[in-house]
Amino acid sequence: MSYTIDDLIGLLELEPLERNIYRGRNRDIGSGRIFGGQVLAQALVAARRTVDEEDRSVHSLHGYFILAGDLDIPVVYFVDRLRDGRSFTTRRVTAIQHGNAIFNMSASFHRREEGLSHQSAMPDVPPPEELRSELEIIREHADRIPEQLRELLTQDRPLDRRPVEPLDPFDPEPRDAIRHAWVRAVGAVDDDPLHHQAVLAYASDYGVLGAALLPHGRTFRDPDMMAASLDHAIWFHRPFRVDEWLLYVTDSPSAEGGRGFSRGSFFTRDGALVASVAQEGVIRVRRKRDT
Image 1 (tube, rainbow, N blue to C red):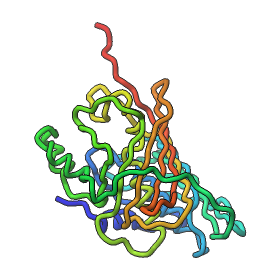
Image 2 (image 1 turned 135 degrees about the vertical axis):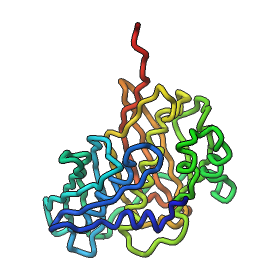
Image 3 (image 1 turned 90 degrees about the horizontal axis):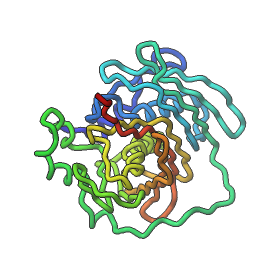
Image 4 (image 1 turned 90 degrees about the vertical axis):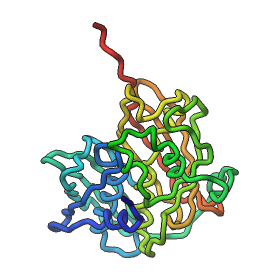
């Protein structure tokens, strides 16, 4: 069983149903519900399909996860064309299942122009060639994965993720709320910028909320842990390719009241900051009721 980058790009190719209406397929990655990054990426593709100007690419998107997605039926995306300006284009996307909105997103597209430029510095970390892939680490612990999930969680993946500070996914120790991981598509991606942006959107939802659990030595698979993304935002700063190594730096400045907040930054190998991410999610510890 495998899940390739071609499979992921195919997942992003939506079926047009009517003007401004698209349908997307699902892929289970072991969570028992639609992966939030999939809906995020498909909504971005749906929005971009309604932008007529070829010289405009997404510069920001802001989404809210409303209901858990059902893996067994397609997702239908409705796009509202809110504004077509001289420099910016604005779209709103609603993802529907069973007659209910499960996700909505606003996205803005900008015509490329010159301007002032500065950025934060990239952290100094070991290169990806010196690190082991996350998949390799997981496969070493395959005997600790429930049998019904073992094949799914150890299959080949479309993205090679190499953590700089690997942790035991089954017995993590408390640590600072920051982590670094290199990520790259396994194989070549075509030259369509939308595919690179959509794959980055997909990758950005993987593990970002987990930074909020690091100080507590917890993981999403703890039986008493309930976690779910509430919202997700991305700002795209500079051109990039997802089939070249990107460093994803995530940290969590706060967790309180059953919610955790995390941030992320994507850097190219030569240090260019290409995208910034922010996400808040529910992180609840289920408590046994008194008897």
